[in-house]
Image (cartoon, rainbow, N blue to C red):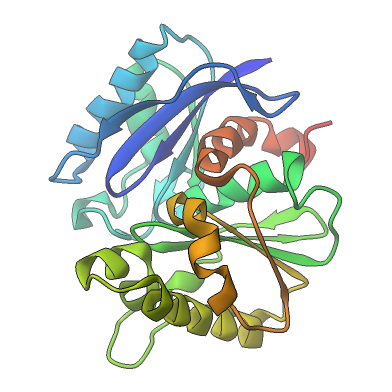
Length: 252
C-alpha cells in the first residue's frame, strides 16, 4: 500500500510517497519552504501543492508541529497564533480534496522508528526526540503511542519553554558551537530522564544528521541512539499514521 506522507516544519513542508508495508519512501522528497506568515490558509495551500505534485488521490498522513487532539490544533507551537482551534484535518482535506490524518510531528516520527527503525520490538517507555526549529517528543509505552507528550514545552530558567534555549534554532540564532549547543541538549535530556525515567531515547530530526558532532556531549544514564531514518522519519511515520486507528501504532 502506498500512502502520501507530509511532514510540516517551521522552515519547510516536505512530502513523499511511502510503502507502508516496508517503510520505504518510493519517491524523492518534495520540499516547499514554509510560508513566512506561518498562517493556516497559506500553509494549507502549500500542502495542497505537495498533494498535486504527486498527482495523488487517497488518504494522506501529516505530521504537524503542535499539539493535535482529534485533528484540532491546541497550541501554536512555532507557528502563528491563529492556528489554535483550527481543525487541521478538515482544513487540509477541504483545500487538497483528499482525506487527511494529522498528528503531532514527533509522534509521527516515533511511529516510523517504532515500526521500521531502532525502536521496533522495544518494550518499556521509548521516547523519540526530534531536533529542529523546536524539540519534539513522541512517547511510546510497549509500542503504543501516548500522544502529544510535548517535553520541549518544559519551562526552563527565564525561558517559557526549554526548546527556545536548546533546539537547533537556538544553535543557529546564537551561532553556538556543537559543544555549547550539545551541552544544552544534554541538559534537556537530563530533565527528560528525571521526569519520565525512559528505557530508550531515540534522537531524530534534521540535526540528527550531525550526530557525530554532538553525541559525545550526551551524558545520561538512559540509552540514547540515533534514529536510522533521521529526517525522513516524519514523512514515513505520517504515512503510517493513517493506519494507526486499526493497529494501535503497529503495522501488521
